[in-house]
Image (cartoon, rainbow, N blue to C red):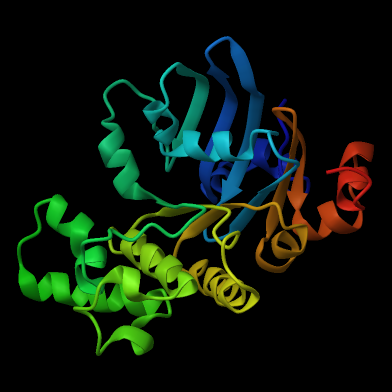
Length: 271
């Protein structure tokens, strides 16, 4: 099922430069867990420097599709993918591409905050840099500070960098994980239900952070919270039972959906 963004579809064929605005192109992607087909021929384009939300009821394939974008699904035995995921013109499933390199370019923030439990705040952010061979302490220090600032956490922890990452509150831990992802300077940031385990104050700070970060990085977020999708996203994809039902601007999806199934979900008639 191929669904383009409604306003620009006609321009894509006539103006090649429009295609360049898309950071991620998902082309006819299907995913199997063993014999079960969890994602069914999904195609969509994600604009650069934007926030795209995947919404839909539990089990509809949102997280599976998200994990396909950085090949994280390959960590699950028995998973198979067909189709293409193209980031800046490069097919991440090309046999010559090392998935480790893909995961450097495409960061991931998980549902529950997962700081490294034995590491300090500083070392949590620096971990990926050191793992990838960076040894210059001055550069590492600069990147850690910049990442914590970009994650809106620096002012809260700048005098506590050697404290354990686990000593932070839940919302702070999630921002620490975002800082850890940002330290690798990703071009795309994937967020899987990043506020589901947080209180309203923590959730609000993450949402504010998402709106700020989109000036620098393309963000794709999975959320069960439709109000959250409405607040933070520019585009919304509604999925149901592995199918992409509708995709467009968040305003259009929430105010004037084209599909009856979308309208029923948005209005709370099922979910």
